[in-house]
Length: 110
Length: 114
Image (cartoon, rainbow over all chains, first blue to last red; front, side, top):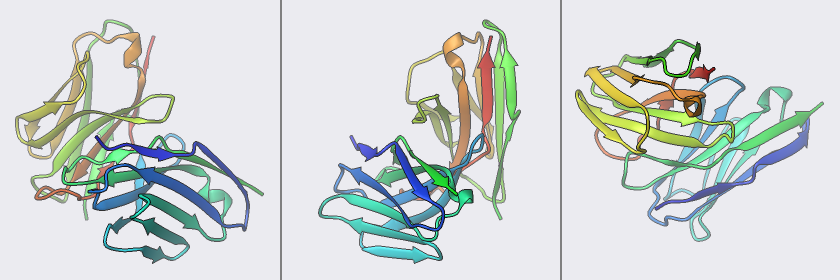
């Protein structure tokens, strides 16, 4: 089955860019998602990208997809302390059940 | 717009007691519904999903059960809680009708077993 991997932690300084990386194994994955989870809360859908796209930009968020390497990244420009959270990558193929990574904890230092 | 409600937000229960967590979705019809558990290690474990009333699929054999008595209502239950049932429980929904629709999550229930 699908396997989605993420690094567990990322620490950045306020105002810098953050890049959170994700790899997946199933080349038939057609939709790839990024979720944000703040402490004690549920997962909030941030953005998603179709596998026929290379990039998607939404305000401070940029998603890059390298389908050949099965690599997905989320770039947050001008990172703020309010961006501190756990970010989950998820991949979905033909099933309606996506596979989630374990999440990357983003820590933003003032 | 669509909204998803989970309650209670926090629950403390003794070992061996029953459990009932409820989730309802508003603003959409015929959703796919899901129950996840998130342990301290942060990964999401899919427990149950449902594509319609009375249709429940279990992903992991365990001490829990799920029911869908109405189209937009999903209930997670247990007859006797174990210490290992502690965790953060999340309900989610997605649009039915083809794969690859994103899931939308509730705010979760923090369950502590004493």
